[in-house]
Length: 155
Image (tube, rainbow, N blue to C red; front, top):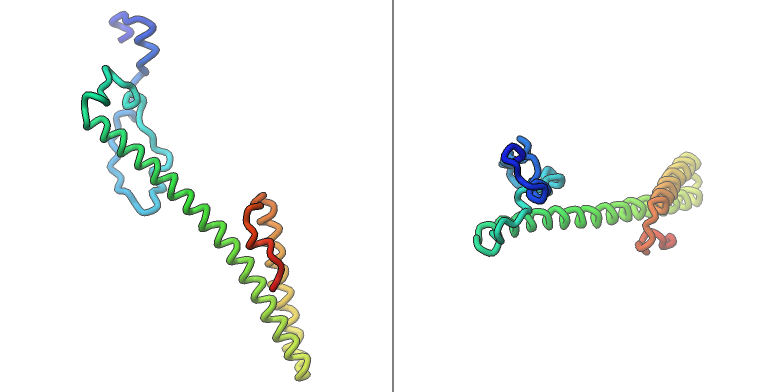
């Protein structure tokens, strides 16, 4: 187009074509669609030459499909975020539960006079208590304040 002597207004509208702009994506969609999170349409798909989106139904369908693909990737990331938050909460709850269970074993072993079991139970209770506190500190460091579940006291 430069060699043909086109004006600056037309040259500003079009960009140089690169080989990667013409590549066809044949990847099959997977459930997580992670390989598509950084894909985008080349620049020439976003120009509307003589309103071809109104005159050709296949272009409208093409744009709709690309939009749906981008929306599905966004939805997957939102679901992943929700799962990570839940898993973090479950881990903290598990550590708290285990600390309570070992505390019960500790109390039971002190009444029957088993010092070895008592020492082991104290050690296990401390391990799980520290894991719970460490996970809570990491959670708070991530500035996640809208989750009430993690901030609840031990039952």
